[in-house]
Image 1 (cartoon, rainbow, N blue to C red):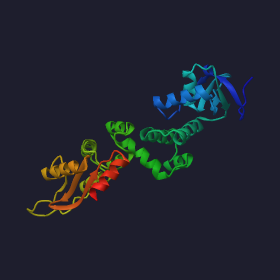
Image 2: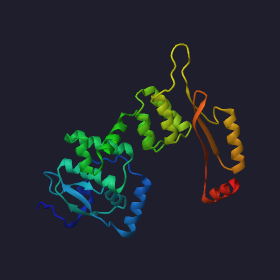
Image 3: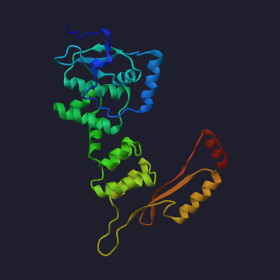
Image 4: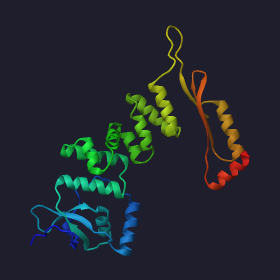
Length: 280
């Protein structure tokens, strides 16, 4: 007899359940999964998963929400899992899977971008309609989808948290691919903050003081310990004084300093107190 969808919790055999075809999460952190496995081993499944019946198959179900719980029960060799059966079309399947992952266990920015785009492309939704369905601002959805315009190597760094979402959004403002890749390499090699990156990109996009005739253009430059002996000596002196890593950077337009920074790296609150005492 066909199971009618309702809110009743029932035990369903694991071998009767298949994963969600529209699951936006492509990878699950093994550490997070192990924590859930340990929790279920000790306390059991505290919240039932949600499934829909596979069309034309009486005892076959597809996961709507709860794939991590399902995988954890598989790892524990459980025979059944508590579940609620719901009616859902393909659009609802993708939407609910996206919302669950977004609200419960954040997707990385690229997975989220692909999920938003999949929702838009598969079901012919505008970015504004996608935003309403997932409870986000339209500009948020737009910015995430824009990440997919970045080269694969930059997207991979975003997924691996080698550069932040903020860095990536600033990089998107650079139209030239070659320049974008060069600045991306600088983010990593020089450990650029988002603020420093904005200064560099702004200077690239809006060069100031371009002279006419035979006069040379006023060039933007960033000076740091790696390319300026004076700043290298200054950083070394401060490093010895505070017994911790210190960075000194200047941003110059021509011969004029337009901004600069001294960054003192801390490892603990004790470091802060010691340095404050040293400064006096």
